[in-house]
Amino acid sequence: MLRILRSGRRAYEGFRKTTIQKRSFLSEAYGCEEEWNTRLQIPLLQKYNPENLFMILEHKYAREELVSAVDIDIFANIVRSKEQVEELLNLLQSLRHSAQTTDTLDSTHHAVVRYLLDHDCTTELMDVLHNRLKYGIFPDHVCYNLLMDTYIKKKDYTSAAKIAVLPMLQEDSENPITNALSVYACHKYLEDPDAWPEPPKPVDDSKEEIKIRVKYLRNPYFDDHFDITDPRKLVGKTLAFQGRVMDNTLGRTCQLRGLILYEKYQVATELIKQWLNEVKGSIVYKEVFKLIEKDNESIPEEQTANELKSLMEQVNKLKKKNLCKNSLVEALENNIKFAVEEQQEIDINNQVQAYIDWEKRRQILLDKQLYEQKRQAKMEDITKLKKYLAERERFLTFFENEEQIELEIEKRQQGDKMEMKRVLRKPNALKKLKKLKEETEYVPPKIEHMNK
Image (cartoon, rainbow, N blue to C red; front, top):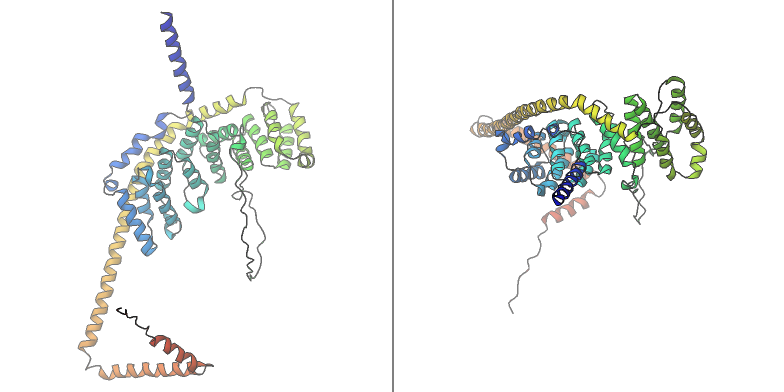
């Protein structure tokens, strides 16, 4: 009996560990998997094979340098094999390099993100999302939430933080779940910030000195937003952005930590002064001061002495005021739970309706594209027919219009003579014409095989 109880306890512990490891903030229904997979039953998408469609689109782009946003959308929605990741990325680049990139469908962004997520292509996914100029993929709120929730569940907080900074870069704070997950992902990532190193700066290793004449030199410009590459500053700006949206004790805590990470010390100083005068309840979480000390350990002492002195004076004043002593992590988790309860059903209903709308729009645009192709083909046929009829008319009415034709020939010959006189007036014209004639009349020698 005791053996049975022990084995049952071990089984329970194993189940408990599995449950904790696979913990998720979003429900299974949030992904709308069943509704998303029904797209494959649409007659339009069933007509195409991913391998054949890629060959057609690649050949068309190589021949005409043209690519259709609808065609790329169809490919992104029907591709299922992991081996076609590179093909999908190549087509996205082709679309981005064409004028059709402005017509990219919303369903394309969604399909690309879900395809890469389903196949666990984290490296490719991060490259696509952070290289917007190259691929032009901008996720919707459901994709943001699914991505962050998935990586948080895997305890891959670095990838979750890389997703969290994207809504901030787009200055998007419309979705409460996205906002809450972003703050949580950034907070958890900062427990091990070395996992996301700053990309190396480009090094000019060219040995040749190339001098180029330019009209004027452009002054170096840094927009302090899209040009930011330091992960510390990106995460800090995200915390500050989302904290400002929350406007409560948790939000002020995120703002304070975020502005210090973002190195906006003067802004943080003024903000603390404002809080000391205006906020009556708990200003920030007490736990944040230890986190700030940990964040500042990597800052050089010279910079700390010069730029953080007045800020830390205000921080010390803030420590003596009314602070919240509850757990900051629990507050962040409760913030997510509240947002999910409030927004989850709305997001699910909107996403299911979006799938229906995307299907209708895709069909409308495809019909329009096919109609335009048929119209262009008819125009080409009409142009060829008009040319043939004009040549035929000229042939049949030659004797009636013989004098007019001779006048046209004479007029063209006179024009050629005038052009030749103009050319001959140039220096060394005769030598150049002679050389050009020799090059034109050159016949390469024949190489005959001698029989030994």
